Length: 126
Image 1 (cartoon, one colour):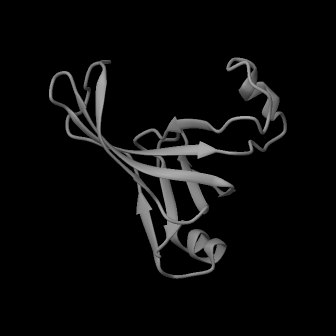
Image 2: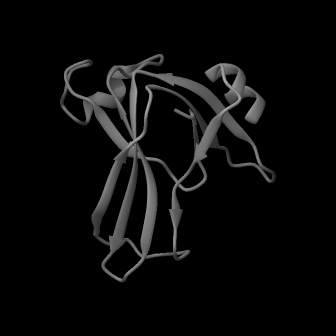
Image 3: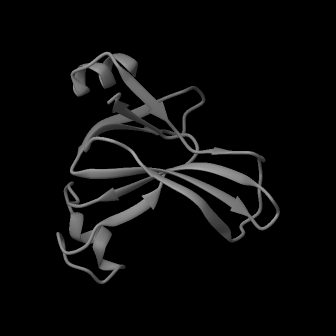
């Protein structure tokens, strides 16, 4: 995974970030954002965990992305250091499928989401 990230990003100086919660099994609850920090750059490698009996990740490059480190506090005091991604241009075989539920057209608004705990985002160190 590291080799793919460094070769794709063109540098051996990279950082790996993922979402971390202070408490396992935290209930669904509302969270308050306490800090939002924009990550530098716009080219990233995202690695998504797959459900296998051992560690398997699907990694791909992501361009035209704005990524953020977000600190949050839940109603029960659970803290979360999350990675959020905002796509300015969705790619893939059917990007319209992702936008249909949002009632927006491709390229009109960024589409943002938090990454699950097991996903990893690699970025070049700036």
